Amino acid sequence: MRLRLVALVLLTLLATARPAPAADVDGANVHWTSTGSGPAIIFVHGWTCDESSWQGQVPAFSQRYRVITLDLPGHGKSAMPKDGTFSMELFARAVEAVRSEAKVERAVFVGHSMGTPVIRQYATMYPKRVAGLVLVDGLVQIAGVAPSFTPPPMVGDAGLKARENMVRGMFGPATTPPLQEHILKMMLGTREATAAGAMSATWDQSWVKNDPIAVPVLAVYAARPLATREAISRIFPKAQYHEIPGSAHFLMMEKPDEFNQLLAGFVRELK
Image 1 (cartoon, helix red, strand yellow):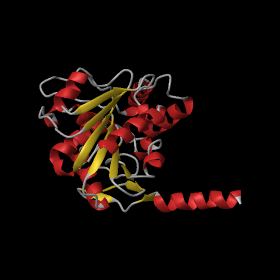
Image 2 (cartoon, rainbow, N blue to C red):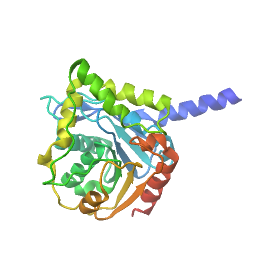
Image 3 (cartoon, rainbow, N blue to C red):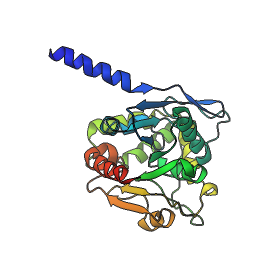
C-alpha cells in the first residue's frame, strides 16, 4: 500500500512539474518549467545560477499558484545569446518570452541577486504585465552613483578561482555544506563567457534609471543586505522591507520557511 502511494505521488509530481517548450529570444532558446495552476509567480535566478535556485519554493507555492522558473540566456539549459552579448534588456526580453509562451497575463516576479535588476528592467519595459515584484537580496543601483565594486577576472584558472572565492564569500552560518556544494557546482559550472558577460551587464550603468517603479514590492534581504534601504525606497517607493536574521545571500535556500512565509503573505495581499 505504501509503495502504491509513493508511486502515485511521484506520478502526480511528474504530471504537474513539466519542462515547457522553450521560449525564444533573438533566436536563442530559453528553458523554463511550469508547475501547478492559479495566479502566476515567475522566479528569476541570479548571476551564474539556474532555476534550481528555487527548489525550496516550487513545492510550497505550486499547491496554490502556477509557479514558473526559468534559466536566463547563457545559464542552465538556456542557449547563449546569438551575438554573445549580455544585457539587462536581453534578460528582461527573455523573461517576457517565457511569460508570453506560458500565456500568462500578469504575474508576480521574484528576482534573486542579479535577478533583481532583471525584474526591475522588466517592470520598466512591460509594466502592464507586473502584479508585484519581490527583491531577494538583490542589487539596486542608482543612476549617477558609480559602482564601488570591481568584478574579478572571470577567464582561465585564475578566473575560476576568483569566482569560487567570490561565491564562497556569499555563504554564511546557515549555508549548510550540502547547500554550499549545490551552489558551487551550479555557479562554477556556468560558462566563462556567461560569467563575464552577465557580470558586466549587471554593473553597466547605461540601463540604470532613477524613475520610481510604483508597483507593490516585497524586499527580502539577508542579515548583511546587498542593497541599501535608501536605494530600495527611492526606486521602489511601495516596498515592504524585511531582513531574515541569520541568513546570507542565498536566503531563500537557507531559510526557506521564513522566506516562503513572507512571500506567501505578500502574494495573498495583492489584488
